Image (cartoon, rainbow, N blue to C red; front, side, top):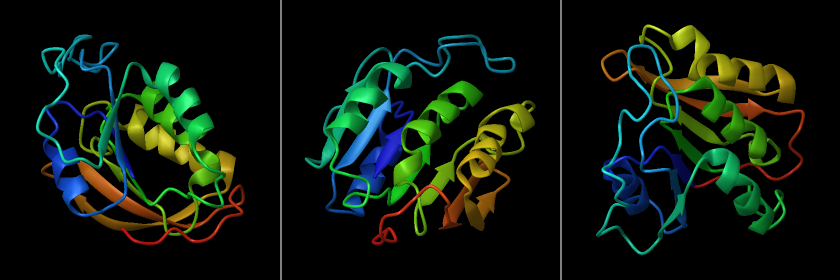
Length: 174
């Protein structure tokens, strides 16, 4: 279970209250690293402060995904022992979403739930999280079903139903 784009920690607190599993939060806490639509680089900064008063099952990984994900993934048990149960992807940007999905691709399989925070209804949605997910589906042979979406919050949740690149057990528990 992981969240990418923690900001002030509201959603990671909620997610961590729903599971006893470790919940890993990834963020620079310095805002988005590049311009996104009309938002300049540095938007959505959390004042460079890591959220405090989080449950004990929350662990933070501070830095760019490209810097923190390789070591994180290398430290995990094999994919068949620890498939992705749920990812909350709130990084807004195409490149960040690609890095997340590619680094975790061999752990994403049937039963994995992916939540995208800016999947639709933003001025640049066809070029951001949506595009990264669609390209990853093609590259890794993922099939999915939509679980829900909100036009107000621009969020979408999907469950992976099949994967050509995953050999582990079905993810359960979220």
